[in-house]
Length: 226
Ligand code: CA
Image (cartoon, rainbow, N blue to C red; front, side, top):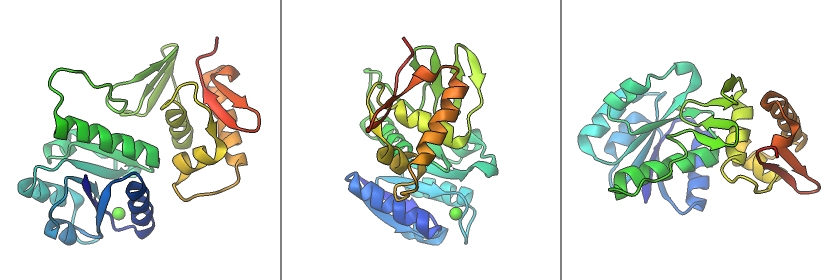
């Protein structure tokens, strides 16, 4: 699958291009709206809304007139992006910045499944569009809300990303390095103590220490407490 990435922020663009290439996608990069509208031959578009030359919404509208390729908008949290408006403009989905690389790939694959393969009857479990249930924990990636025993718990962006990453494979042990790469940045190698600090605060908010188990010398796993 060929992906057109429309993003003016060089550091984000570089890391997304490198990461998606490593995942087996072909990626073309456009640094502004004009370059995006001039591009062709792609199967999906990742479109940053804050572009230097044009409003990303206009780019979206105009892309939609030229292509049926699915469009995923990349929006900054502060922009208070209106999902309904985005869909009216012709976007298929959106991802809120800062996003973890793993989440972005999950969204790309989910949109690709929905729009390219069009599974007629077999329901596809799409982690991004419906809440994931893990014991008493409900994790909604679309709205970024978490409920424990039906009560909403307020997580910071990083706590949410950490939980969402661990929840992609219940019971699997994730190393601190894997967590740093996926939750913080594909190319961010900070002190692994950062992970431990976020695990500690997340445990507190989930109400039970046992939700996130430390595996000595390896990393962490998420599992419903026994
Ligand atoms: Ca931007």
